[in-house]
Length: 92
Image (cartoon, rainbow, N blue to C red):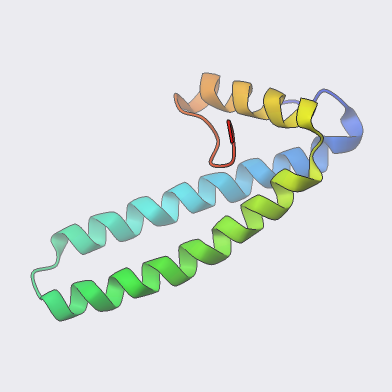
C-alpha cells in the first residue's frame, strides 16, 4: 500500500504493521479465551488481553495522529480494499 506523499510512507507502513499486529493479538486472545472452561483463567486472561491491547492501541493512535488527514483517509480506503474492513483508527 502506498502513501500519497512519499515522506509519510514510513509512518504509513508502521501503522499497517502495528494494526495487523493488534488484530492478530486480539484474535489470538479471543480464540484462547473461547477454548478455556475455567472461569478464573478466563478472567486472568481477559485482564492480560486488555493490558496488551491497550498498549498496541496506544501505538496505533500515536502513529495515526502523525499522519495528515489526507493520508489517514487514503490509508483507511486502501486498508478496507485489502482486508475487507477499515483500519482500527479509521473513520473516527
